[in-house]
Length: 155
Image (cartoon, rainbow, N blue to C red; front, side, top):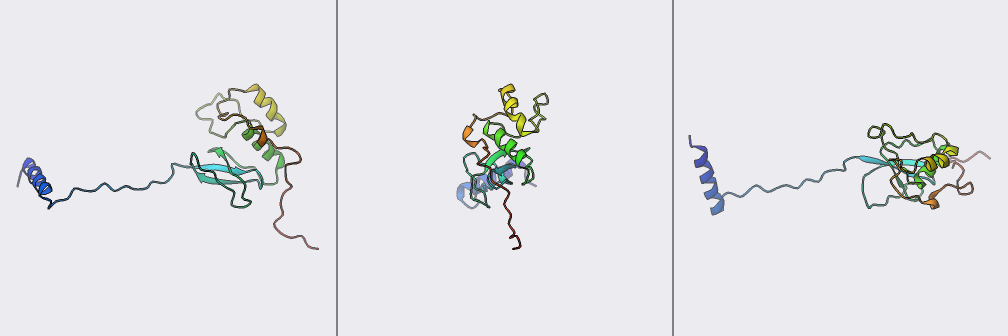
């Protein structure tokens, strides 16, 4: 048996001569850390997408922009217009949907659309308000579409 030092010495000689190549570092591509909910306000659907900082996602159904809602976003049913208006209003005011584990004392997001304006006024420093308000995204009565029906009605 050879000693450990002797084995390392011989390995170094082999590397210098070129009969022993150094192991190459294999770069493995890792997937995203996690998926984040993205919502389309036009067709009222939610999709899980990889977390990308600068990438803009488009809705596979209608082609509109998808908005990153946060990991704890639960999409309302497609035909619940009031809840979608609430979600869109909160997004427009800069709120995102995160877990309350890190902020157990933070006020809960409003349940109803009619309570959003008062909630925003009362909580300017809410921890889930991470963006500046974008009033162009606020829902308006004329802007909201009626639910689409994919099947044809009998005539």
